Length: 270
Image (cartoon, rainbow, N blue to C red; front, side, top):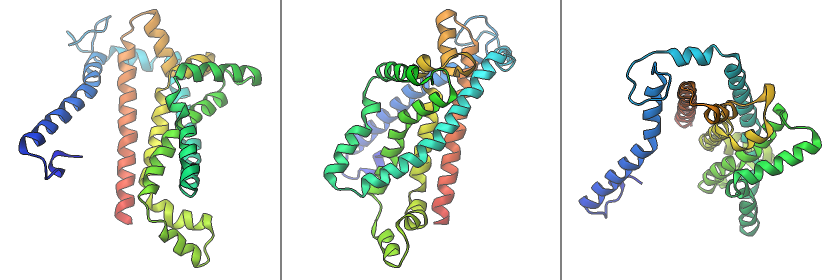
């Protein structure tokens, strides 16, 4: 809530809230502000601020077949994860919304388990399960694991939107002869489209940035970019990491901008 949206607060309280919000945003953005300039350094080591400027590490990144292979693997897995997690999470949220409060609360506890449980425990469990069904180091295994991690974010986002949605509109369509799936697609989905897109964005970012599970179940030709980055930082301080991080930031910002653009158009057309 913005400070100006609190009419009961004193001017000093509003100023303090504004300062506090600015400090939080600065703290969150500080790593990004530092990483981006470092990616343009010509030094053999990570340094801030750079003493000389160059595109050396971007050429190193885009000219490396190993880095490019890992990048395309991560993007492919992230897109496939989004394609699976967005509809699954949306349908699950809709089903939970249509159940009783008691059942919904129990299901929400189950949904939050992948978020609450430490990632290392999930990674160990997935690794042992995949070892039995021969899915380790495969694209299919990565997509399924990342989908399980991403679906809760879609459910939480869509369910929050459904809680503020007037279901009588869908019920009116059904009373006029429309089937429940058709009423959902024609009436409900267009009005919660922004939350679905937001959930899809969170699923994409969850997959693209995930490292712990990928560390266990990805490798070889199907190693993700985060796994290779982790290994590179463990073995040596490679400034190429800063260039890769900047590219991932750009991808995330572009994905978020696309969600905002499509969401705004959807609201305008509605």
